[in-house]
Length: 320
Image 1 (cartoon, rainbow, N blue to C red):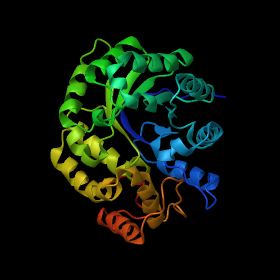
Image 2 (cartoon, helix red, strand yellow):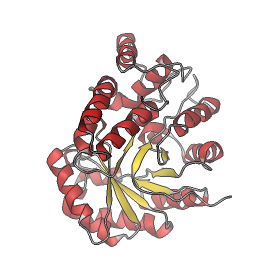
Image 3 (tube, rainbow, N blue to C red):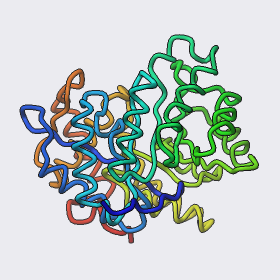
Image 4 (cartoon, helix red, strand yellow):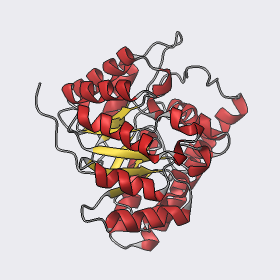
């Protein structure tokens, strides 16, 4: 196996979807096509798999390994691959990290253990130990996934800073704190560390507002559909061209309404239907407990893609 491509924690990093067939098995041909669609977007810096967008909570370890193998076959020679580490037990998380490095990943996206949702914010040493177990199993760069505090899985800012200080392989956070004040505080304090830690936004429903605060990039499931628009927005913000950034944000707005309106849990379900509407995916199947969307909502998703000016031919093309 060739060495993984070097990972830089910045820029636009789409999280890919995982198509299933009618029997809810992985649809490998559809997944390969989707990887190549997303991987061909000009300006992205990496892709992410085995995360929320691939419905990782419903995938066995063997399926996650198969997802990784397919990803490396299709795009591993072109893009660094960020591999999710989604496990409640630290020993299992360490095994996933070790296998991800073995199989060619360029970085790890570390989810909080769901066990911590039952009061873990009062025991920060638990979050730290979980992260250290993963870091001890792999020397890959780590992105910490920061959740909202209200759900019980987010890390208080002091805990987050402690984690970044204690584990030298932490290079970034994926910030989904969902609180503008906390988001700005984290940006300022992580950037000010003696070993700077980058911030990748996943506030996709208010992305322009997030990026202008100074994020180093974004890591988002919406990139499975709108990566080209995200690249255009990120580049405009980086260039200080607010008028252009607003223009792109206006195009993005209908898509994020379609993806992220309540209930939030259907976001990737909706993205699959968007790709069906655009002719880039043949069918949209999700694994339970997710369920098929109502017909009226499916129609609304199609209207949103049209309102954004997206077609099957242009969705992954550079934005004019």
